Image (tube, rainbow, N blue to C red):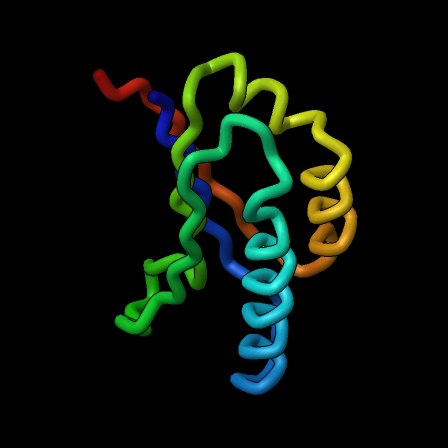
Amino acid sequence: MIRHIVMWNVRGDTPAEKAQAIANLQRSFESLRGQIPGLIHLEIGVDSSRIDYACDVVLYSEFESQAALDAYGSHPEHLRVKRELADLRTARHQVDYAVN
């Protein structure tokens, strides 16, 4: 199994704008459930700490294999989500790792 974790900071000059960007991100990624072969688990978390070095949102996902994660990268539904969210982020961090 492969864990795929991505963290973002999103655009927004006001708390309301940031909240709307986060809601859009959540809605887009949650639409992938049941659409991606090999995607076992998908979870979106929104930061509640509000500390200055925290990211705004995290995607925690699990894939059956590295091949499933690789296929996800070019899956049409994932590409749709990337297009929808392209202008929302100001920073992105990613970690992928195998779990035995």
